[in-house]
Image (cartoon, rainbow, N blue to C red; front, top):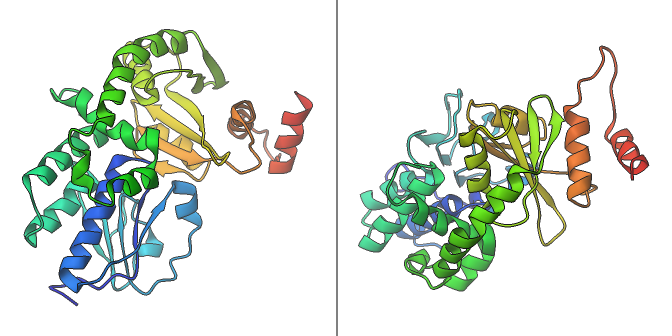
Length: 312
């Protein structure tokens, strides 16, 4: 043990955004400094994370909401999601006003792991992850964040060989900037005309081009939809469909929880079952789950898919 830190067997982090990537790498560097060992990083989406057995005797987790099952001796959790749990055994480093990457970086700085490049990268990551839209560098921060969303966690990690500082002024940022300037206005205009009701409070926003997060943010900001929660769908390369929920009143997380998802109050996500094969299946699946049920009635997952197939 080094200065109150337990040597981790694993470092767990969120796979779907820049905050998770930066936080995971920073914790790995901290473990290297404290214990002179290379600890394996495991990147998790929310559904996988909820199902994963925490079999390791010790571990560090970043950007994954603190849960009772994580409250174990020799575990450290660095996170900024809202939680009412008070740890009894684990070490919890928690602040909802800071990104997970900033909280991890503060630990690194305390142990001599800092640089102007990391200062800059963590600053931009913090702006993007907390969606600080009034910050003058908000657009640039979103370009950095979109690198992970577009090229994926492990592809970027491999490209950078773990040296996240190489993201600064990376040529791929030019691709993100061009996409933002050209695609986003086109995407907003199209999506504004393609919002479909899934329930009285949830609307599906179809997207064909542009930054999905910014498109939905603009729709909510402008009051273009009557639904307090908007959802978008993305089909990953492995066929998995991801549902992303956005709101302005804290309801997104409540809706995502119905699908075993998680995240922030106004920005949450969930991985849909593997039996959901495409976006239209996903839309129907979410609609069925959100459909109000009569007292005493219940609908199984199999029945939901029978209903979906019958409508094709």
